[in-house]
Length: 629
Ligand SMILES: [Fe+2]
Image (cartoon, rainbow, N blue to C red; front, side):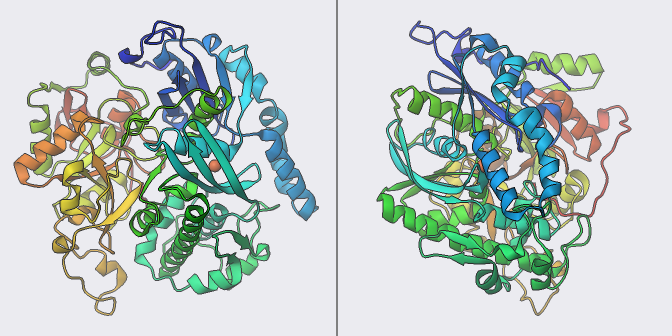
C-alpha cells in the first residue's frame, strides 16, 4: 500500500492555506468510510480543492477502510498537514446507524444473530470511535463534526450545482434510518422536508435484484441497469403486486416477507426465489433470459417510483430545478427520463452520487450550514470543476517513471498531440488515455479513459474481448463535443458527467430485425446505427458531453478526430479491467496497458506503442461474466 502518493500540487490554490485575499484560508476535510467506497474531500473557503476515493490508491475496488491515502492526497494537494485543518467532518452519524441495527436485530431476534455477530467487531473496533481514529491517523486535534448521511448527499447535490435555488432529492440503500429524502436549497441554506425510512428502500429493492441476478451488491447495480434493454419487463406487475406498494407520492412500502436484509446475511429469501421461478443466479454462471427480464422489470419499477417521487417533490417545493444524489441517482436511464419528461426545467446530479460523494457533501455542509458562509453561484456553471478533483502527474513525473523502468516512449508536442492521437484512433487503434487530474466519481471522463473509434463495427468486439475481458456484444459509452451533441443524440442539455442516457438520433439508426426473426444473442450483434460501438439495443447511449473549458486536452482529441473523420463522437470507457478500480498513477496505467491488448498508451505528452514494449508476464484473461463498467 502506498501512503505518500506523489502528486502535483495545483498552483491556482497556493500553499499552506493562504487564501487569495491574503487572509488565512479555512480548510475543511470531509471523510466517508467504513461502509463502502471510502473517500476524502478537502475544501478551502468553500471551494472544492481535492477529492478522491480510497480504492484508487489501494487498488482494492470499493475499499471501505479509513481513507488514509485519499486524505494524504488531499492534504498534499492543499499543501497542508492534518494538524492545519480547521474542521474534519464525517459524512454519517454512526450512533444513529447503530441504533437502527440494534432495533432491526431486536425485531427479528434471534434470527439475525449471525449477521449481528458479524457486524459487531467492526462497530466496537472502529465505527463507534471515529474521532479517535481520525485524530490518530491524521494528527488532527480539533473538533470532529458529523453530518447526517442524507444531509451529506443533499449537500453534495445542491451546493456544487449551478442553481441558486432548487429542489433536492436523495435516494440510496440506507443511511442511518433514511432511504430517501427531499427538500430544497436556497442560497447557502438547505432544508430537508421529509424522509422515507428503513426498511422501505428503493435502493435496497434494486440491490435485492442485483443479488438475485448474481451480481455483487453495492457494485453490480450498474450491470443490472445495463442488462435491462436486453429483457422485457414481464415481472413488473408481479413486483408491483407482491413486493412493493408504491403510493402516488412515490413513497414505498416493501413486503418484507420476501426479503432477508433486515436481520439476515442475504438480500432475498426462498419466497422471493419461488416468486421468480427458481433460485438466484450463481455469480459467474451464464446469464439467461430470466435475468435480462428481471433487469428490465426492476428497471421499469425503479423508473416508475422515481418519476412519482420527482413529480411529488415538484408539487411540494414548486422549484424550477432539481438536484439529486444517492446511489440510486446513478441510474442514468431514470435520470434521462426525469430530464426529458419534466416537470423540472433542468436537473443536476452529483457525479460522485454514491457514498464517496458524502465526503464532499459533509465538507460543504460544514462550510455553508454549520459556519453560515455565503454561497455565490455563477449562472449556468457548477462548481464541481468537471469532477477532475484527483491526482495529476506531471510530464516530468511520467518520464522519470518510464526512464527508471526502461519503458520505450515518444514525446508528443502540444502542437500535434491531438492530431496524432486522433489519427491512431481513426486507424482503429485502442488507446489508454491518462491526462490531468483523476475523476471523482465512478465514471471515467477523459482523464483515466480508454478511447476508440465509435464508427467501426469491430471496435465493440475488440474492446470487449481483448481489453475489458467481458462478453463481446456490450456497447460502450460515447464522448461527444458538447456543442455537437444534438447532431448525434436526442439531447438538448449537456451531460458532462455521463449520468444521462439519450437516444441516438433517428436518422442515424438502422432498421433492426424483430425478436421473432433472430435470437437475442444474434440480435445483439446487428449494427444498430452509424455509431455501432456505442448504440444500445434500444438505440440509447450513456453519453458524456465534453466541454472545452472543463477538459481542453480531451476536447482537443475529439475535435481533431472530427476534423479528420467528420465524426465528433468517440468511445470512452473507464481505464481498468474487470474487478479493478480505475487506474490512478502511471504505474497503474502501464500495468493495465500491458495486461490487455490495448495498442497505445498516452500519458500526458508521452506516447507508448505496445509493439515496442518489453515482454510482460502478467496477463488478464477471458472471464464469462458480463462486465459493464
Ligand atoms: Fe448513501
